[in-house]
Length: 300
Image (spheres, rainbow, N blue to C red):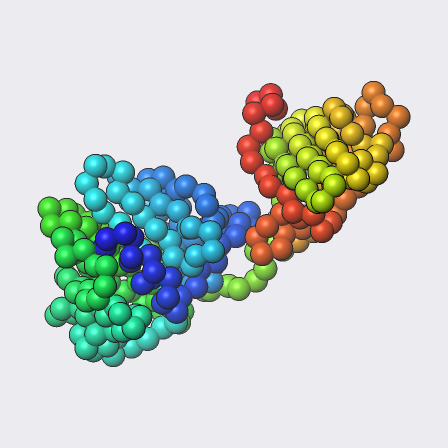
């Protein structure tokens, strides 16, 4: 599909995927994380797990509910994976064959959909509308479990790789396992110590007349190094905490919230405790947005 117009098609479909990590035995899909061949893919909301096929990589784009797989070779191929509530597959085949209007300008029609057991496939999906590249072919398949959920794959490839990409899409479904879906909070058993270890957490705040930047390296051995820079009126916000600082850190509890405590060494500073939580899968310290990434300053 030219200009990635298929992203628009998929995002408009009525689907949902869980996209946070509860750090349970199976890790939920994380937005923005790259999954390589062999990595487990797990959606508690749909009770479905599978793995990334050989020669492929994938991710769950932020603000999206569709998992995208990409061919790691030079050949073009993409597979979109999404879930839906259970539907009679014979009825779904009729819907596919009659065509589905995704937008006012784009219509998808499956040619000769075939039903075999719990798997519905169509060897070619014809897309009609604006901005569609006629050089690519599409393949669709849906598999339903016995727990009230279905998973659909939509594969896009050029003529020379269409069969290989289609087979890979079916492999994802056939190798997948359905279990009882769950919509419990992904943070009920969240391990903050594990999450924060060897992380760099950073925030930047700029207002008229002032600016503040905070960087904290939290190492697995319980030590930290921080750098806080303040300018203008923000110099008056917790003015004793500034410049380079170090010490030890702890977190209290497992669950949706935790209390991070920094105990400083070398300076006569009182310990600092802040509440950490996730809001819409974003990390907050009290009401301040923080960003977390792997630290390059911690000894491994």
